[in-house]
Length: 62
Image 1: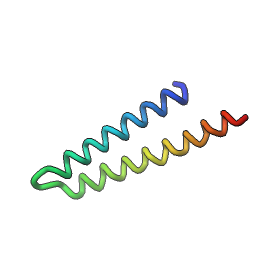
Image 2: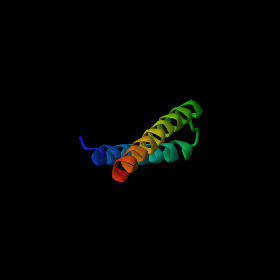
Image 3: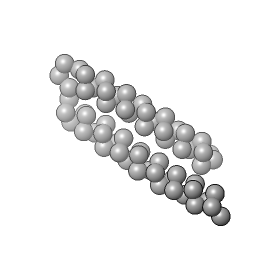
Image 4: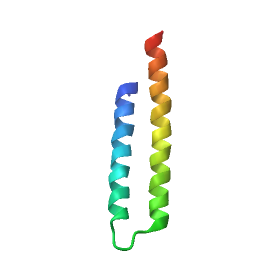
């Protein structure tokens, strides 16, 4: 899998988690522990995306 396609997949998963968080948040009795887990996973993906983008930028500079 190329770096670009891997980044695209991670961004797709990040967006899906964002939608899941929004749905959970708007439920009449939102599950706080589920929200926390979804947010934790979203943050992990965000960190991984940022790391891969920095690698990608470094590769284009060389």
